[in-house]
Amino acid sequence: MVVLACALTEQTRHLFDAKMLRLMKPTSVLVNIARGGVVDEPALIQVLDEGLIDHAVLDVFEVEPLPGDSPLWQHPRVMLTPHSSNRGNGTGHRGQLLFLANLTAFLDNKPLKNAVTENSF
Image (cartoon, rainbow, N blue to C red; front, side, top):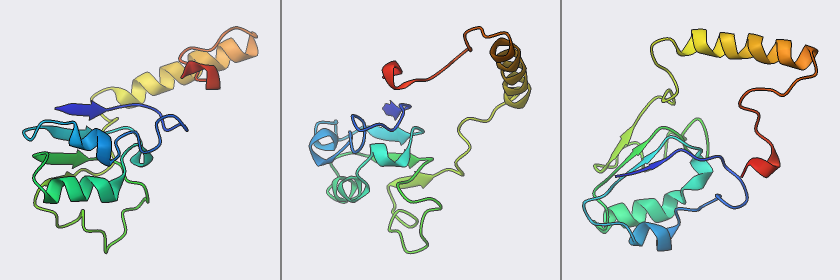
């Protein structure tokens, strides 16, 4: 199983292209909870059609919402989830606490928690 949970940057756009997907084992499952642009969707469909990987679980897509005519909707080797991989018990409360801590830090001119910058990648 390969789980993608990275940011979408110029370095990660189509990181999982035809070449990378073909390096996976035939029993592999690709799970994308990152950003849709990390996976080359036409290449993924081709690899799935050829049976080169077993399955894909997709929470994100290059175009959102996923167009009604996308072959991903009906593909027998694809499971789609409702773009909610970040949700769980207590997620909202933790987000509120982080926001308040960062607001206080910002107002006090202190470093923010979990700050992401271009240099983070």
